[in-house]
Image 1: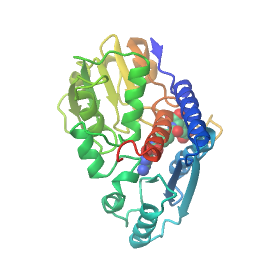
Image 2: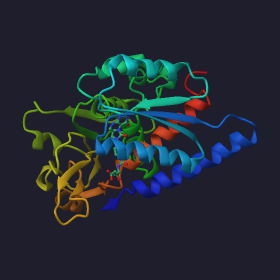
Image 3: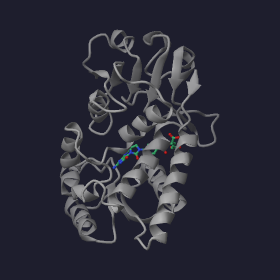
Length: 293
Ligand code: L34
């Protein structure tokens, strides 16, 4: 069993980005600039956005954090998006999800200029992704592709089972892994809450991507020997022995599944860290106008 080390891999990629930023600056180019909009006080969202801002510092990006109270109106948030669209100093920006219930997330995503949509959530980027055109790939799926690539895990002709059909993970990773590409050419089964006999489907997986948000959902007897496990879940479960009263677990029962796996991502220290690094990669692409010249 090989642990896919998201921490080590994300540090390596951040060093590569930092070198490129230096080269851009030496050549007299503009420092890449990411903005993040954070609405409300959700502890997990705050931690993720903090980590994004800190990572910008690490690689030499400029970053701007825009914080607003959960009571912000939809129109006020849309106005912020418009300002960021029009601000030439900003190369790319994100609106951290989830948003408060009174705000329509789809409306906000649709308002983002696709050229600055470094989350890859806008339908223009999603559609381009589905057709194999240049696009911003959503950060979590992009991070998964890099883990598979850098650990030289063969994907061509493999059976990949995806648990969960969200717009930000399950659906895009299903499309990406089925594409004709270096990391791709999988036969993909996309499963969800209405799938009949989930364990039987999961047992067919050479590669399992678990993204359903249920703590330790996948059990040891659900997987076949030698499976590659990508655990996207970041679930907080109560733990009175922990300093902050909780610990993080994935969607996979690690104790049971790891011994049967050829490769597995840990939680924490896996996909989550690659999500942050992939956002930096997308921001670099935005700054270099690589996707939309
Ligand atoms: N707009 N909203 C937008 N873009 C995104 O890409 C996200 N996502 C998801 C939630 N909402 C979003 C994130 O940023 C999930 N996510 C994210 C980012 C970072 C980490 C996890 C999820 C992360 O750093 N995880 C660490 C542990 C963090 C902790 O201690 O809480 C890890 O080791 O997995």
